[in-house]
Amino acid sequence: MSKKVVIIGGGIMGVCSAYYLHKEGHEVTIIDKSNFSKGASFVNAGYITPSHIISLAAPGIITKGLKWMFNPASPFYVKPRLDKDFLQWAWAFKKSATASKVEKAIPIIKEINILGRTLYEEIKQSGDFNFHYERKGLLMLYKTDKAGEEEWEVGQRAIKEGLNVNHITAEEVKKMEPDAAIDCKGAIYFDSDAHMTPNEFMTEMISYLKEKGVTFYTHEKVQDLVISKDAIKEVMTTKRKLKADEVLIAAGSWSPLLTRKLGVKIPIQAGKGYRINTVRETGITIPALLVEAKVAVTPMNGFTRFAGTMELAGFNDNINPKRVKAISKAVSNYYQGLSLTQEEEASADFGLRPCSPDGLPYIGRTHKYKNLIIASGHAMMGWSLGPPTGKLVSEIISDKKLSLDINPFHPDRKFFFCKR
Image 1 (cartoon, rainbow, N blue to C red):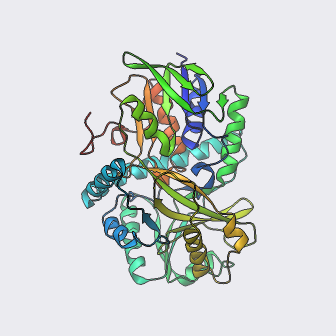
Image 2: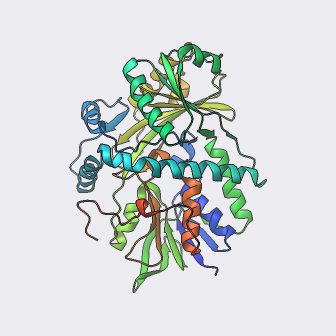
């Protein structure tokens, strides 16, 4: 049965959900407070990441975070602030950062990432799109023995999950990337990963959806959600009222601001990430993660992107030049002869990634309202998890068998401060 579905949020989660919902015959409307051309969905590293099996809430990250707290150029920066939501999130993050919880999450994270890779390939092969997609794997480049040992531990755990992972020498790295002049001690190579050019996919997907009759409302902010009994009946924006059979909140870091209106608490903190592009020839052909610096390197269609940092500092549009410079410095530290120019640094952009306390996204219905679905909290795996999230949302709304068990992603899962 066809339903009227209103999607709040036009990022990767919103458009992928619209894609699969449209295929199921639903009438879809997407609302976004911007013009569908900026944000985390456009400035990310473009990774599809089965390799990223360790959640953000990993053991030891709290200790590292405390060391880095007063260094605004560090890979993981937390701005200390007396904010109730942040303090509750931070405590839940600490409680989640245990070896047993991370271990339990590993197969869950791997499975949904593998599904994401499969779905991207299906979309590419459909013939409806012409976006850039390559599967060349991912090089985890390290410069110290300690970092190499830590990454190889992750690699060995990934092997147990069925991924193909190799520990390779600096000489082998050079053979793989002969024109990139990489300065490293070695690398962990995951052949499971793929990469894309995000703005290409987003632009093509939005054009496709418009051609197929999906309605887009730009520069509209949701002001209220009209409730009748246990369901949302209308979505009120700054310009209109929209009747809805189903409502999907996929507004990224802003999702909690909407759910709060409904008395639904989904703990999320905005994690700012930066990117710098260069259109110069770099010789880089394989995506890499610069381990010690936590900087992602992606050869995209016509340019190379350098992205990184996790800055938990609330909502703001500030670009911290120290953090941009830290990314630039890391690039020249790992790639000999490659120095980003002041003009390239000045063109840096950012996106806010929605981070849950336990490193798992929120996907599914809440118990409080029978027609409300949440799709948010994907943190640094948002690009990788766009299609599987969209497909799961469509399966939920269409009452179809789910591609994955979504219980680990339940929006109502309990944290110590949440009363359901």
